[in-house]
Amino acid sequence: MSTDFVSYVDLNLNEETVTPWDGTANPAFDPVEPGEYTLEVIDATIQQSKKGNPTLVVNYRVLSDGAMKGKECRSWYSLNNSQGSRGRLKQLVLAAGVVIDERGGFSAEALQGAQIQATIAHEDYPAVDKDGAAVTRTGVRVIKETAMPKAPLPATTGRGRHAAA
Image (cartoon, rainbow, N blue to C red; front, side):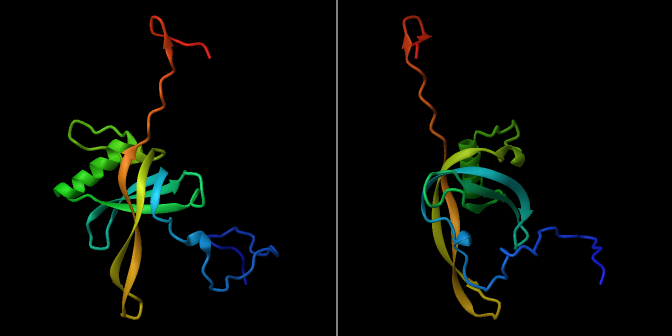
């Protein structure tokens, strides 16, 4: 058998520390717990939803100290022209400090690296499993996006000069 592959995956699966997955749950994949967090936008891309609608998909990383630090989550923002969708999107864009141009648009790429404050909420929704049975799934939502608090200005003395440290 040849080891010449067109798409070769170089992960060194021969290491003794790499054991086959036994199918048990991995806590690393547990969702971010509900709460208030500082988040960083990893990336933001425009994609098509399962229903064929344009959607902004934003991937976040938790920066807040604690058990959730470093965990990632995703949020979907509808790009339809409804008042609610536009309001939700504007909340994110303003929180991230992204410039809205004269036409009312913005660059999705400009969100990358932005840090915001937000609430992570869990929301149950009906779904169908692979066998066609009705199930309830829990989705993670990023809501109430706000700008990071501004650092206080240094104290001044006299004619607007900063006090010596």
